[in-house]
Image (tube, rainbow, N blue to C red; front, side, top):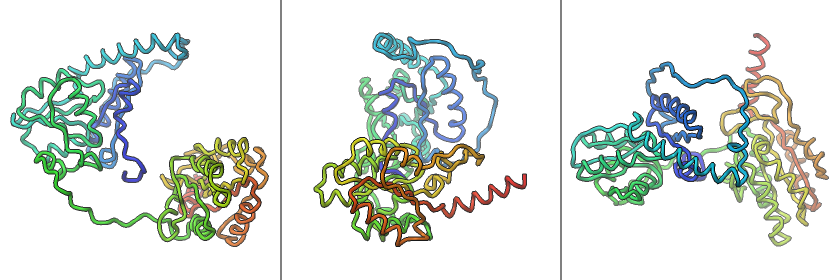
Length: 422
């Protein structure tokens, strides 16, 4: 949970979906394994889950590039309704084919070069994968290791031989005990990490504690600087106003999510991209009238395009008796994740002009009676007055709060200059 609200273990998706899964440990393996994933996908005509984790993504190591002999047939369409239209009559035999493919991949994985065995001291054997391998290798350099490259389907015969060759066999993995549970389910005795190490990333120190069976309290890390909105960000005026008006704010994912922190503390829910409108409508339908009238949904421009449009349709189709107000904070970019363009900016990712989704036109087309566009920096009093009026009217309202992100405006001006000079 470095920058997310959940700490999920995506390895279980491979099992649930019936897809092969590869886990690189470093930059070189990320380069090599991706080509292997394409080969597996083409050979067995199956998706491959290529599992990356935070530390692998945020690390830099030397990569030796080399040519890949990958299948590259010319694109053409082949009709295959039995394989692509999963009505029950097609899905039943397709499920049997899938299980047969997974059995073949598991047999292949027993001898494939994706896993690596390192023989060392027989008193300690470590089963691991991904970045955990490097933590464990540094924590116990003299141990025996089996590093798994494909972690679904597992090479159980290889694992069984390794476990039998050492006196103590322990699984070192981040997150859920996915490997440990899968290996034990196959009747192979392995030791798992204590429950307390299920949370957060591993590092060399934590692995040493696991190997020592140390379950004492871990040192509390020093507090870091909390994130905050940029100075001069137009979102500041919005969240400050909503807090002052004592609104119940159904929030969404973007820079404005930071409005939950002091000094604003003006956000009451955040679920996923685009959920703010649906959450706000739900609150409007079920809360007592005096509370329902205070509910406002706040969503960013890129998030609205991502999955907020359906919520706006729902607002028109099933309007709450107290009405509802949606604020689209349009700063003209995808600010939280790198200033990318989106369909509401009128530019492609490489900054070329393209068709633009106009939010206010969409709102009027849907039939929302109160649609307004304003700049909260130029007219903060007008923004507050408009919010109060729509809430008091008990009608349906959409306010597009439009003010360019300071960082994006600077970048776009530079890109425009380069484009003119090229």
